[in-house]
Amino acid sequence: MASAPQSSGVSKKKVECFYDVLSPYSGIGFEIICRYRSLWNLDLHFRPVFFMGILKAIGSQPPAMLPKKGDYILKDIIRMGKYCQVPINLPKDFVNSVVVKGSLPAMRFITAVDIAEPQFLESVSRELWMRLWSRDEDIVQPESILAAAEKAGLPSGKSQELLKMSTSPEVKNRLKETTDEALKFGAFGVPCFVIQTDGQPQLFFGSDRVELLGNVLGEKWLGPVPTSSKL
Image (cartoon, rainbow, N blue to C red; front, side, top):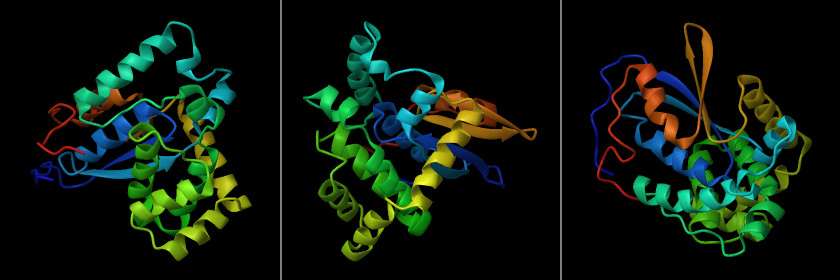
């Protein structure tokens, strides 16, 4: 990845990124905010949540399952992937892969990583997202989760420990607490980003709102791919 000059600001700006690998837009927003991490001098915090839990709490359902909107979203995902240089290939059996299987085991594993091995949180999250949205592979079976962890650089023994840990009350409670926290900020979907301005939280929803987030932070937007790097 080509190096880029950092923001002129001295203190880092805290940004919380709430996401679920089940959401294709989460992966897009995840990559964009990572690309701007050094450019905008961000103190970036990844906050894994359970997307279906958010929808249940607000009495909604997966956007792709809504008439008309679903048809549009499936086309929009492909366009956004190309524009943002994030490799997306829709799952062949979309309903089974996304709606039926969901992401709960994956997000619990990611939460376990966040608790015990946070240095791998970014890479594990990315690999699980890539399995579903780039390679049309399973993300809920134990062997699938372990394969993603291995690709992300986690040692095999540690991955096995984290997989076992992912079913513990500690992990289940942490994922629920983070999801509830996102809801308290006003989240109704993912990805969403939260910053603090004048001691008050501001929430930005969607992978297409990083530009607005930067504007509020006083930073310059250089497009979704501010360097020449590609995934």
